[in-house]
Amino acid sequence: MSEKNREGKRTARERLAVERERQKARDRRRRTLLVSAAVVGVLALAAVGGLLAANAGDDDKKKDSAGPVVAPTGAAGKDKLAIQSGKDGAKSTLTVWEDFRCPACKQFEDGYRSAINGLVDKGQLKVQYHLATLIDDNMGGSGSLRAANAAACAQDAGKFAPYHDVLFQNQPMETDDAFADNDKLIELAGKVEGLDTAPFKKCVTDGTHNSWVTKSDKAFEDAGLRGTPTVLLDGKNIFEDQKNPLTPDKLKAAVEKANG
Image 1 (cartoon, rainbow, N blue to C red):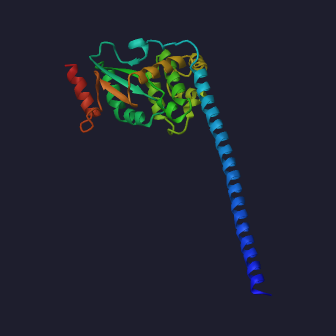
Image 2: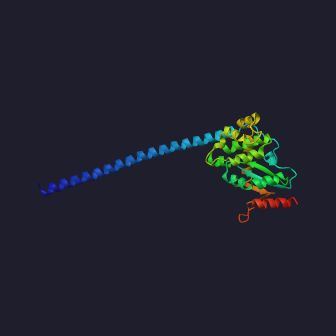
Image 3: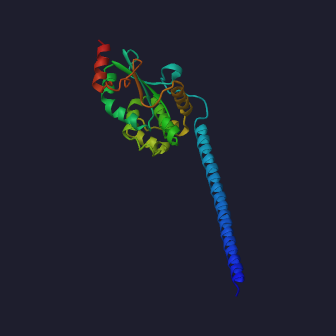
Protein backbone atom coordinates (compact mmCIF):
# COMPACT_ATOMS: atom_id res chain seq x y z
CA MET A 1 0.00 0.00 0.00
CA SER A 2 1.39 3.34 -0.98
CA GLU A 3 2.26 5.95 1.56
CA LYS A 4 -0.41 8.17 0.01
CA ASN A 5 -3.13 5.57 0.55
CA ARG A 6 -2.03 4.96 4.14
CA GLU A 7 -2.13 8.70 4.82
CA GLY A 8 -5.62 8.94 3.28
CA LYS A 9 -6.95 6.11 5.48
CA ARG A 10 -5.36 7.64 8.58
CA THR A 11 -6.93 10.98 7.75
CA ALA A 12 -10.31 9.32 7.24
CA ARG A 13 -10.00 7.48 10.59
CA GLU A 14 -9.09 10.72 12.30
CA ARG A 15 -12.03 12.51 10.71
CA LEU A 16 -14.32 9.67 11.85
CA ALA A 17 -12.90 9.82 15.37
CA VAL A 18 -13.41 13.57 15.47
CA GLU A 19 -16.98 13.17 14.22
CA ARG A 20 -17.68 10.51 16.84
CA GLU A 21 -16.40 12.81 19.58
CA ARG A 22 -18.58 15.58 18.20
CA GLN A 23 -21.61 13.23 18.20
CA LYS A 24 -20.85 12.20 21.80
CA ALA A 25 -20.65 15.86 22.76
CA ARG A 26 -24.00 16.54 21.07
CA ASP A 27 -25.53 13.54 22.86
CA ARG A 28 -24.18 14.79 26.20
CA ARG A 29 -25.63 18.24 25.59
CA ARG A 30 -28.98 16.76 24.64
CA ARG A 31 -29.06 14.58 27.77
CA THR A 32 -28.09 17.59 29.89
CA LEU A 33 -30.89 19.66 28.38
CA LEU A 34 -33.42 16.86 28.97
CA VAL A 35 -32.31 16.41 32.58
CA SER A 36 -32.34 20.16 33.16
CA ALA A 37 -35.83 20.42 31.74
CA ALA A 38 -36.98 17.59 33.99
CA VAL A 39 -35.42 19.25 37.06
CA VAL A 40 -37.02 22.57 36.22
CA GLY A 41 -40.34 20.79 35.82
CA VAL A 42 -40.00 19.10 39.22
CA LEU A 43 -39.01 22.37 40.87
CA ALA A 44 -41.93 24.12 39.24
CA LEU A 45 -44.31 21.44 40.49
CA ALA A 46 -42.76 21.67 43.96
CA ALA A 47 -43.12 25.43 43.91
CA VAL A 48 -46.74 25.13 42.87
CA GLY A 49 -47.29 22.50 45.54
CA GLY A 50 -45.63 24.72 48.16
CA LEU A 51 -47.69 27.68 47.03
CA LEU A 52 -50.87 25.63 47.21
CA ALA A 53 -49.92 24.37 50.68
CA ALA A 54 -49.13 27.90 51.83
CA ASN A 55 -52.37 29.18 50.40
CA ALA A 56 -54.21 26.30 52.04
CA GLY A 57 -52.64 27.31 55.34
CA ASP A 58 -53.71 30.89 54.76
CA ASP A 59 -57.20 29.70 53.91
CA ASP A 60 -57.32 27.69 57.13
CA LYS A 61 -56.27 30.75 59.12
CA LYS A 62 -58.86 32.89 57.40
CA LYS A 63 -61.47 30.24 58.10
CA ASP A 64 -60.45 30.00 61.78
CA SER A 65 -60.55 33.78 62.11
CA ALA A 66 -63.81 34.32 60.27
CA GLY A 67 -66.78 35.76 62.07
CA PRO A 68 -67.41 38.68 64.40
CA VAL A 69 -64.86 39.92 66.91
CA VAL A 70 -66.05 38.67 70.30
CA ALA A 71 -63.99 40.00 73.19
CA PRO A 72 -63.80 37.79 76.28
CA THR A 73 -65.66 38.78 79.43
CA GLY A 74 -64.00 41.68 81.21
CA ALA A 75 -61.53 42.45 78.41
CA ALA A 76 -59.57 45.63 79.17
CA GLY A 77 -57.34 48.20 77.52
CA LYS A 78 -57.56 49.85 74.12
CA ASP A 79 -60.19 48.21 71.92
CA LYS A 80 -60.64 45.64 74.71
CA LEU A 81 -57.66 43.65 73.46
CA ALA A 82 -56.17 42.81 76.85
CA ILE A 83 -57.08 40.27 79.51
CA GLN A 84 -56.44 41.68 82.95
CA SER A 85 -55.31 39.83 86.02
CA GLY A 86 -55.43 41.83 89.24
CA LYS A 87 -57.40 44.70 90.65
CA ASP A 88 -58.09 47.92 88.76
CA GLY A 89 -56.85 49.93 91.74
CA ALA A 90 -53.33 48.46 91.68
CA LYS A 91 -50.77 51.24 91.33
CA SER A 92 -48.48 49.35 88.97
CA THR A 93 -49.34 47.85 85.60
CA LEU A 94 -47.42 45.11 83.83
CA THR A 95 -48.21 44.86 80.12
CA VAL A 96 -47.29 41.48 78.65
CA TRP A 97 -47.37 40.46 74.97
CA GLU A 98 -47.19 36.67 74.75
CA ASP A 99 -47.64 33.68 72.46
CA PHE A 100 -48.48 30.33 74.05
CA ARG A 101 -46.18 28.52 71.57
CA CYS A 102 -43.25 30.86 72.26
CA PRO A 103 -40.34 29.21 74.19
CA ALA A 104 -39.00 32.58 75.37
CA CYS A 105 -42.45 33.38 76.79
CA LYS A 106 -42.34 30.14 78.75
CA GLN A 107 -38.91 31.07 80.10
CA PHE A 108 -40.27 34.43 81.19
CA GLU A 109 -43.30 32.87 82.84
CA ASP A 110 -41.25 30.19 84.60
CA GLY A 111 -38.88 32.82 85.94
CA TYR A 112 -41.34 35.56 86.90
CA ARG A 113 -44.57 33.65 87.65
CA SER A 114 -44.15 33.48 91.41
CA ALA A 115 -43.21 37.16 91.76
CA ILE A 116 -46.03 38.35 89.48
CA ASN A 117 -48.71 36.20 91.08
CA GLY A 118 -47.58 37.28 94.56
CA LEU A 119 -47.82 40.97 93.67
CA VAL A 120 -51.22 40.46 92.03
CA ASP A 121 -52.49 38.62 95.10
CA LYS A 122 -51.37 41.54 97.28
CA GLY A 123 -53.30 43.97 95.10
CA GLN A 124 -50.12 45.87 94.21
CA LEU A 125 -49.93 44.89 90.54
CA LYS A 126 -52.33 44.36 87.68
CA VAL A 127 -51.23 42.52 84.57
CA GLN A 128 -52.68 43.13 81.12
CA TYR A 129 -52.02 40.19 78.84
CA HIS A 130 -52.06 40.70 75.07
CA LEU A 131 -52.08 37.52 73.00
CA ALA A 132 -50.15 37.15 69.74
CA THR A 133 -49.76 34.41 67.13
CA LEU A 134 -46.14 35.01 66.17
CA ILE A 135 -45.11 31.35 66.11
CA ASP A 136 -48.03 30.38 63.88
CA ASP A 137 -46.90 33.09 61.47
CA ASN A 138 -43.26 31.97 61.56
CA MET A 139 -43.53 28.19 61.90
CA GLY A 140 -46.95 27.49 60.42
CA GLY A 141 -49.87 25.88 62.16
CA SER A 142 -52.63 27.27 64.35
CA GLY A 143 -51.61 26.35 67.91
CA SER A 144 -50.92 29.95 68.95
CA LEU A 145 -54.35 31.03 67.73
CA ARG A 146 -56.29 28.16 69.26
CA ALA A 147 -54.48 28.28 72.60
CA ALA A 148 -55.14 32.02 72.80
CA ASN A 149 -58.81 31.41 72.00
CA ALA A 150 -58.97 28.76 74.73
CA ALA A 151 -57.35 31.19 77.19
CA ALA A 152 -60.00 33.77 76.29
CA CYS A 153 -62.65 31.08 76.86
CA ALA A 154 -61.10 30.49 80.28
CA GLN A 155 -61.42 34.23 80.91
CA ASP A 156 -65.16 33.93 80.22
CA ALA A 157 -65.27 31.34 83.01
CA GLY A 158 -63.22 33.49 85.38
CA LYS A 159 -60.27 31.07 85.13
CA PHE A 160 -57.82 32.86 82.86
CA ALA A 161 -54.88 33.17 85.26
CA PRO A 162 -54.64 29.50 86.28
CA TYR A 163 -55.31 28.24 82.76
CA HIS A 164 -52.74 30.68 81.35
CA ASP A 165 -50.18 29.17 83.73
CA VAL A 166 -51.20 25.59 82.83
CA LEU A 167 -50.72 26.29 79.11
CA PHE A 168 -47.17 27.52 79.64
CA GLN A 169 -46.36 24.73 82.08
CA ASN A 170 -47.45 22.21 79.43
CA GLN A 171 -46.07 24.01 76.38
CA PRO A 172 -45.00 21.61 73.58
CA MET A 173 -41.80 22.00 71.59
CA GLU A 174 -41.90 25.03 69.30
CA THR A 175 -42.02 22.80 66.21
CA ASP A 176 -44.83 20.67 67.67
CA ASP A 177 -48.17 22.31 66.92
CA ALA A 178 -49.92 20.30 69.66
CA PHE A 179 -52.04 23.26 70.78
CA ALA A 180 -53.77 23.18 67.39
CA ASP A 181 -55.70 20.20 68.78
CA ASN A 182 -58.77 21.50 70.62
CA ASP A 183 -59.04 18.19 72.49
CA LYS A 184 -55.59 18.83 73.95
CA LEU A 185 -56.64 22.30 75.11
CA ILE A 186 -59.78 20.86 76.70
CA GLU A 187 -57.74 18.11 78.35
CA LEU A 188 -55.47 20.73 79.95
CA ALA A 189 -58.56 22.52 81.28
CA GLY A 190 -58.98 19.50 83.53
CA LYS A 191 -55.98 20.76 85.49
CA VAL A 192 -57.92 23.90 86.48
CA GLU A 193 -60.67 23.35 89.00
CA GLY A 194 -64.10 24.10 87.60
CA LEU A 195 -62.97 24.93 84.05
CA ASP A 196 -63.74 21.68 82.21
CA THR A 197 -67.38 22.53 81.52
CA ALA A 198 -69.74 22.33 78.56
CA PRO A 199 -69.67 26.12 77.90
CA PHE A 200 -65.86 26.14 77.93
CA LYS A 201 -65.67 23.18 75.56
CA LYS A 202 -68.13 24.78 73.15
CA CYS A 203 -66.21 28.08 73.24
CA VAL A 204 -62.98 26.23 72.40
CA THR A 205 -64.38 24.06 69.63
CA ASP A 206 -66.39 26.91 68.10
CA GLY A 207 -63.36 29.24 68.10
CA THR A 208 -65.55 31.91 69.68
CA HIS A 209 -62.70 34.37 70.23
CA ASN A 210 -60.54 33.54 67.18
CA SER A 211 -61.29 36.84 65.45
CA TRP A 212 -60.52 38.71 68.66
CA VAL A 213 -57.14 36.94 68.87
CA THR A 214 -56.43 37.86 65.25
CA LYS A 215 -57.25 41.50 66.01
CA SER A 216 -54.92 41.37 69.02
CA ASP A 217 -52.13 39.98 66.85
CA LYS A 218 -52.72 42.75 64.31
CA ALA A 219 -52.33 45.30 67.13
CA PHE A 220 -49.02 43.61 68.02
CA GLU A 221 -47.80 44.07 64.44
CA ASP A 222 -49.09 47.63 64.19
CA ALA A 223 -47.25 48.53 67.40
CA GLY A 224 -43.98 47.57 65.70
CA LEU A 225 -43.06 45.13 68.46
CA ARG A 226 -40.18 42.88 67.55
CA GLY A 227 -40.96 39.70 69.44
CA THR A 228 -42.54 37.89 72.32
CA PRO A 229 -42.43 38.26 75.18
CA THR A 230 -42.57 42.04 75.25
CA VAL A 231 -43.00 43.13 78.85
CA LEU A 232 -43.56 46.69 80.07
CA LEU A 233 -43.74 47.85 83.67
CA ASP A 234 -45.70 51.10 83.77
CA GLY A 235 -44.83 51.63 80.11
CA LYS A 236 -41.10 50.82 80.33
CA ASN A 237 -39.64 47.72 78.72
CA ILE A 238 -38.17 45.62 81.54
CA PHE A 239 -35.57 44.11 79.16
CA GLU A 240 -34.54 47.40 77.56
CA ASP A 241 -31.30 47.54 79.53
CA GLN A 242 -29.78 44.16 78.68
CA LYS A 243 -26.92 44.69 81.13
CA ASN A 244 -29.30 45.43 83.98
CA PRO A 245 -32.64 43.72 83.30
CA LEU A 246 -35.48 43.88 85.76
CA THR A 247 -35.15 40.57 87.62
CA PRO A 248 -38.07 39.07 89.58
CA ASP A 249 -36.63 40.49 92.80
CA LYS A 250 -36.14 43.91 91.24
CA LEU A 251 -39.69 43.74 89.89
CA LYS A 252 -41.02 43.09 93.38
CA ALA A 253 -38.93 45.92 94.81
CA ALA A 254 -40.08 48.39 92.11
CA VAL A 255 -43.76 47.53 92.54
CA GLU A 256 -43.62 47.62 96.33
CA LYS A 257 -41.89 51.00 96.16
CA ALA A 258 -44.59 52.34 93.83
CA ASN A 259 -47.20 51.16 96.31
CA GLY A 260 -45.51 53.02 99.15
